[in-house]
Image (cartoon, rainbow, N blue to C red; front, side):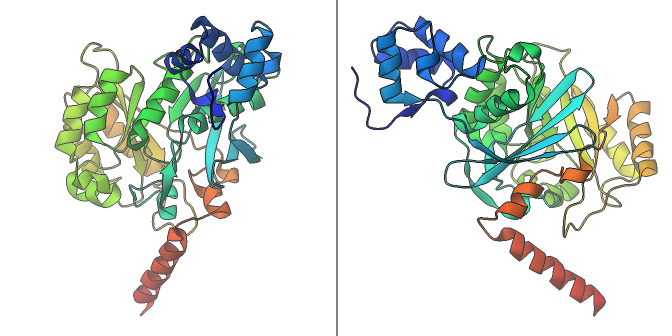
Length: 374
């Protein structure tokens, strides 16, 4: 028997890695497939309950390994059906995931980091700063927990979670290996069986990693765009100073070279008087020429001490009309979960702020307000 000093958490192992683990302990690789299915399709964490394994193997696994998901410490349910969970991860930090039901679709929004280092000016999570990357078991563990909570009998065949979006706390491409491995599990037929069209990664525009992702995965891509020119985007999404719009648009054009029918979702949060003017809509039309893209207009979700306001419905519709008239598929995202702090990072921010950035940010806003008064 192979000796291990610490128990290994198999929850974050994709099938390839799990097969290597079983071969390492002297077992046939097909045993990995059986355990993989027990963990993800049936939600079983006790090796002794995995009845198609030999007793000797079950005993061995109990000694050297474990299956442990991050802990759900709080849940909020919105009157519109949206659910939000606060999840405690290793070290005591907290992250969020959100479930949004819409007809037969159930979309789970998953976090990839504790906090975020990119400091987008309109984002609640950004005000908390960056703590660390999530490990693979902490990322896929969110899906595991959601399926357990939402399924009546705990089986993914009920398809309660039909879509997963990596749009929660953090920049997924800055935690590349753990995120890609977790998405592989989401799409594995012996786990959650999600289509490549139903797993979406959202990035603020880490261009080199976009090229890597295009080679390593077939998941859908969304880009947090939010501005039609470099001057404004430098302010709203500071990573633009490193990878500007010309570089970002080229990466988008190159992302689906073998599938001309697939489009990238451009996320555009609507900020009153900032990025919602008609001339900015026309700039956006010009920017997206030749890019296989559709646009998702997102009404800004205010949070405490935010310096922005949500654009009016009339302003959003006028902006959308210009895009649609120009032939760009554009929808306005329905606002969901307003009554449960649905802005990403709000709930975690209330519970914990490891870097005290929120406190510094609030002091900054107070100083700005005092300067305006004087």
